[in-house]
Length: 615
Image (tube, rainbow, N blue to C red):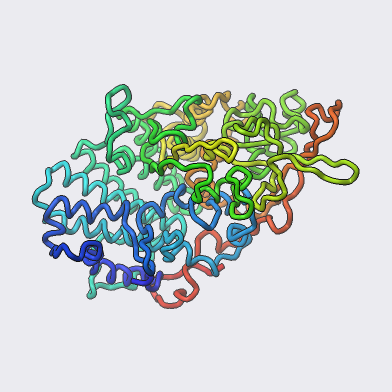
């Protein structure tokens, strides 16, 4: 097909694609002469068909383009040629160049939404997710034909098919809202104009599918694929990219957290209780099978410098990326990649930097917070990067930060005789330099034109650290800071502090520990810091919390850094001044922005399937 037909006609898409799934397989090997029975009865052919979920392509003119599950992976999204990340569509970060990211965060997407629906040359998330859903349904329908496979293989296929079908529905839900839950092969005689489920119903169906996946993985003894810690082969299973029973329980818990969230909650405290229980169960199962939080020293192994980590419950290993690899020109700025014009780069805003507490645990989110920390002798506006949360130094490149190949980062300007000269990392000959005063370090890999390395990249699709934060959030809402889910041995506050302890941070300050409302804000802040720049979490969190109108309607700030003589007022030799980003880099919020629209041309072709508002 040249492109997917009417996106709103989801089941019509299924009729055409499901009916031709074997043809899709045969198109890649037309000389084989395989029949349907050959494809689904022989293990090798069955696996080749099924693995299209992970590596399948779609013909775009004369080129085969990726059209598979990776379009739902956040890191894969970051690697695309449009040069923006999911976080850059929020107040979390700004891109070095004003491109489509700024158009979207300013409230206009209809002209470019095709790039995220069915353009195979870009990131056809919607089309690819429906494509893998139909492959999963075909797998489950035809698994009974498979003759030369062991019970382990059959249960593994069933577990993966249930898991990935649920994962695809979840990614569609997060971006486009509730959907019909397609769990069978639709034919020409089936009703195709299917109403959407409610938001909560969609998520409950996802959770149920993940439960089914976990049951099949358990039968196959695949709660994890590799041996646990200390055993030969640990983290080196050749099938490590595939999900497991532990991952299924974790994704069920994530889905129920979303179902309980203000945007989707329909049953009040009952939904929060279910989320707390599911996340505690997922934590217990993960620990039973040997998963654990990495130490702070190994923290970055969750996403850079290795293939897989023992904190990742499911991950995608993206391979090595040399410093000037084109995949990086959305995340990395041109001053590092050596590109004068083609690179953009993700740059944290001052709003994000303010979320990193002092090392004593004092929040710095507001002027009042910063004044209180300054009064305690723990913060100075003119030495703002001293004594911060250890994750700040892992995640952010700030002025004077040590950077391999650059010494201390020079993100400043100096004025002499009315003429400004710029530090190395503000070289004005590059189009994609930071406008916020910061560069993103967390997923950077520290490679550059001055440090020509090729680090390994991995995407933690879900990791144990998130489960503790999920549990803390749900348990706090259901039972309060010192309450816990039935059968649990950890309170909401203790779960939150577990993550802080790993990061080398003290427990949450007592002033915020005794109130559900006050702890909620610290949980949100902790989640933003712990998961920043990975997984697109913040983009989705501010929506499910219904915080997006406030944070996206506020002012985005940068740090202006001027080199000046050392003095009592400016002890570091720099003058730090908070300033708003330019008007063309600010955000706007519309209620329609909770969900992506479908293509405008497809908006009015359905009756029962109600479309999203165009924006």
